[in-house]
Amino acid sequence: HFASLYLRMGPPKATIGRLPAPPPYSHEAAARELVSRGLPVSDVLEVALTPRGVPPPGSAPATPRPVMRGPRAQTGTYKELSPLEERAIDSAFRKFDKYNSGKLEVHSFFSMCASLDLHLNAKVAKEWLGHLNQVDGLTLDQVKNICSGILAAQTPAVRSCSAGKTLTLTELQASEEYMRSAFRKFAPKGTLGPYELRALLMSLDFPDVHCDQFDRYVGEWLMIVGKEEEQPVINVHDFISCINLLVDVCQRHQEALEAEE
View 1 (cartoon, rainbow, N blue to C red):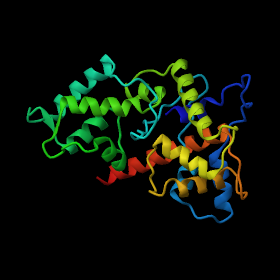
View 2 (cartoon, rainbow, N blue to C red):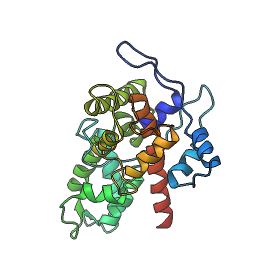
View 3 (cartoon, helix red, strand yellow):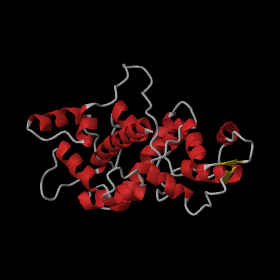
């Protein structure tokens, strides 16, 4: 995911009109300090305590499994499927259409998406299916339409990861600008508070794993980054830190659910 790659590669150098980049922030060290003070280990703290490994210097950044966002996310990329994406969907559809009926049952559609590295949280999946008649199954055209929407809602870096491509600097820069642009809409003066941060995360339509409009997640993240004052001020670098950890939390939740199935 772009945000996680941002953390691994380090913040970009400051440019004119932007905040200077802070030193890399360790959620792990902060979480260990909180636990040492007697704070119970929650799912959010557990993720902070066990971050993904950082690749050796000079090697390619480790690309985590992409976290898919829902249809409320503002479009991050082009809507049309690329020829590579369309061929991949055609092939996967044929593979999971075991009876050659020209349609996929909903559970087969989810399996097909997972095979394409489009891992959908249950709530997000229902949002993408919308009001489609799921009883009769989904045709290839319907599947392509849904997949094109899913991919268009992701950042350029996430979309590239889903296609199995090697990330380029251009895609990383476009993803960074996409996130900065989203931040500016909620923070016209350059900073925001916890309420605005929750609203921003909802607008980006990340999986709300606690089903509370990110209230618990934002509260625990604020503790981890030491912003426990009554009116904490959150800048764009704080926002990127928040997204980094949220991506990991969403991924762990999805992996746990899949392990139970």
